[in-house]
Image (tube, rainbow, N blue to C red):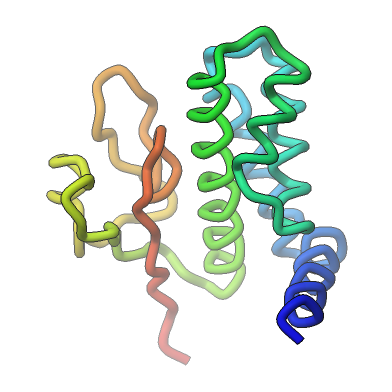
Length: 164
């Protein structure tokens, strides 16, 4: 029963990514972010994004993406793991953003996993409102990013939807 439910969800996500306006928003957001993978050549980063998009449809985990990165690129296992985890999380966060923006959301509440591994700067963001158009710059060496989109970030966006 669980496998059938999972299959139904995958088919729904596939349909949304391919046919709904949120799929177009998601694709555009992901294309903007492909250059954030600075440790790989651009064509390899684009391949990673294609793999990650497929994980949204198939339900694969970051460990499968890591295996694919290791097969196609000359990177260490630890770097492949970091890229895979980060990009799978970024893909899910971007899908949430696309859905929220399509529903009229202007921003979200930053949420953490509330455990001892949360970075201090992310702890400071817990509960703060963030505009989709203005991701915070939390780390000097990195581009601004939304909850769930930074390296190994386990935070997530709680979209604030407009009153209807």
